[in-house]
Amino acid sequence: MGRPVVVTASLPYALDTTLRRRGTGGVIEVRAGVWRIDVEAPRDLATGRRRRRSRLIYGTRDDAERALEEYGPALSSGTLESARADESRAGVVERMPDVAGPDANGARRDPSPRSEKAPRRSPKTGRSARKSDRLRRPQGTGGVLPVRDGVWRLSTETPRNPETGQRRRVTRVVYGTREDAELALANLKLAASRQRQPVRRADRRSMRAVFDLYLRDAKDGRIELAVKTQVTSKSAANAMCKQRLSDGRLFGEARPDRLMWADIEDLYATMRRSGLGVDWIRRCATVLNRSLEYAKKRDVVDSNPCQEATRPRTTRSKPYSPPPAVVDALTETLRKRSEQIDDPVEAAEAAELSDIVEIVAGTGVRKGELLALLVEDVDLKAQEMHVALAIADGGPGVGLVRKPTKESDWRDVPLIDSVREAFERQLARRHELTGREPRPNEYVFASDPDGTKPIRPDSLSDRLAEARGDSNVTLQDLRHYVATTMLDAGVPYRTVADLLGNSEVTLRLHYDGRTDTGKRDAVKALRRTLG
Image (cartoon, rainbow, N blue to C red; front, top):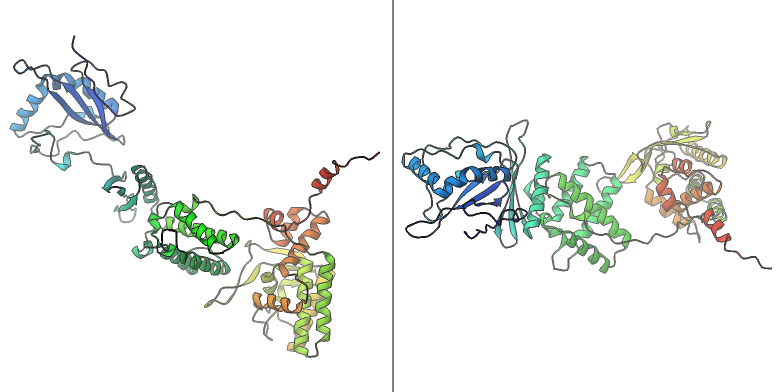
C-alpha cells in the first residue's frame, strides 16, 4: 500500500484536502480568487524519487477542483509538461482553457493568449517572471500592500466620472495591523464609490485644517449653520486645538487620517484636567464630530473616529422656574425704578425694560425673537404677534443679523391684556420720540430713534442684570416660568411646546421643573393608617 500524501491548505478547506490518495493532488488557496493545485508524479524508475508538480488556477474553488480533476492525471504523468515545453520551443503560448472559469468578482477571464512570445520562466520555481501573467485586480477593488512593520499602503480606484470618463486612483497610508488595513480599505472603497468632492492637500495636514475647512464652508453657506453657532464652533475649535495630549502632541497638529478614538478620549480627559466644564466639553465634542463628518464627506478622512469615542457624562439639574411672587416683585421693582429717574431718556429706557419683562413673562418669547419683532408683526387689534425671525450676534466682522428662529419655523402667539398694554406703551414711546407713527418695517425695540437698528441681545441682558436689584431672575428663567405655569394649568405638552417654539422633548427635559403628579400619588400609597 502506498502511504497517503498530506496536502496543507488554508482554512476552511483544510479538512477536505488533507487526506488524498497519491497522485490526486490537492487544492490550496493562495489569495482571494487564486488557487494552487498540487499533484505527485509516479516514482522515477531510475532514481526512485517522486516529483511534485503544481499549477495556479484563477477563479472559484469549484473551478480549481474541476481543473484538478481534468489536469491532475496529466500533471502527474508529465504529459502536460512535455506538451507545454514543445509549444514553448515552437514559439506558441496557449493559456490553460477556460477551465479556470470566472475570476474573484465573477467575470469570465479571457482564455486567449496575451502575447505570441513565450514568457521567461524562473529556473528555480518554473513560474512566469512577467508581471502581466499575474492576477490583476478588477478596477475599484483596491489592495493592501505592506510598507514596513505596522505600516500599510491602500490603493483603489474611483468609478468612472460620467463627465470626463476618467478614473482616479486613491491611496492612503494606514498604521496598525493587517485587519486595520483591510477595514480602512473597505472604508476607502466606500468613499471612492460615493464620488466625494476632493479637497486641497493642505486641508488634510492637521486637525486645525479640518476645523478651518468646516468653519470656512459654513461661513460661505455650503453648510447650513446659524451665525451664533458659527461663533461657538470657532471658540470650541480653538479650545481643542490648544490642548496637548498625553503623548505631547498638540491636538491641532494631529494628522486627521491617523486619528483614533483613543486620541479623542485622551482629548476629553485633557480638557477635564485643565478645568473645563463637562457641558463645554460636550459642546466641543459636537463640533469635533460635525467637523470630522464633514471632512469624511469631502474625502479628507475615510472614517469618523469621534463616533466611537465616549463623551464625558453630564449631570442634569432640575430646571429653575421662579414662583409667581418673584416675577411680580421683579416687574414691580423695574416699574418703580423707572418712576424714580428724573432724566427723560433714562426713564424711557427703564420703562422699556419693564415692558420687555412684562412681554416675556406673558408670552415666553425668546430674547432674540423679541428684539427681531417689527411693528407689522404685532397685531394689537387681533391681540397676537407673529414670530418668525430672531436677532443674533455673528461676532467680529459680521455683527448683528436677523435670522430664522431656532426651530426655523414661524408661530403666532396670542397676547393677554397685560402684554397688549406693554406693546401699546412701547409704541407710544416710539411716537413721542420721533413725533410720528411708527412705520411697519421699524423695530419695536430699537437702539436708534429711526427704528432701523435692533438692540444687541447681550446689552439687553446687561441692562436687566443692572436694574433688577437683588433678584437673580433672567429672561430665560421667565420662559421656564411661562412653561411651568401653563403645564400646572393642565395645558398639553404639545400646545405649550408650540407656543414656546420648542419640541416636546426639550420642554420635558429643560423647562418642566414640576414634581410629577403620578409620583405624588405613588408616595401616598406608602402612608400608614394610625389607629
